[in-house]
Image (cartoon, rainbow, N blue to C red; front, side, top):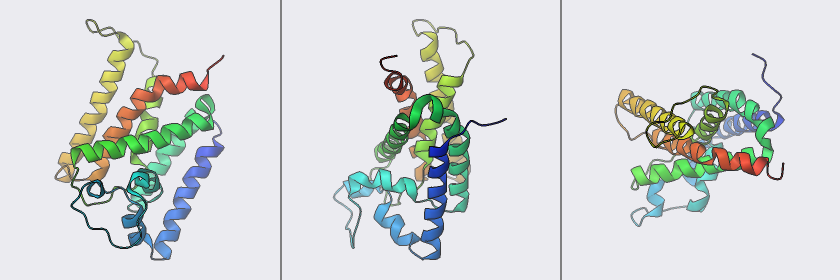
Length: 209
């Protein structure tokens, strides 16, 4: 399969890789994870902060650039390259960027709702990648879905995709021994954000045409 050119997502994947390498070789990864990771407990009154910290409201964005390890980085970068390059041309850089940012914040919100007192930082592009995956599955799925009672075919597809993705993440949580893994809830939130924004993003992209 020949992928279309995607200079924006290709450059973004390269930035993620270079940034992770720099953090590791300089020994700054641990500090960056605490300073720039999304920590739900920071939005409560029970966490005492010490040292410089990125403003909590901005950490869903900064956490996007910090990954737990090479495996997490490689997983997100590969999906970003495969899915993102196919979406970059139809969506454009602006809409794609908005979707990535919205996915990051949607994932962080879902994690906060699920575990508001969690003191472990959420790191990585999982939520943003999940948002892209949702849009890709919704837009490029050519199969016809039959209406389910009063629910139209397109909405049946949305509900089916959302349920399938949530089920997959919950199974991952069970296999990992629990649901305390931040990326599980973030991936669910990012995917649901992508489902919600797929059609608005397309309308934004092709407005006036």
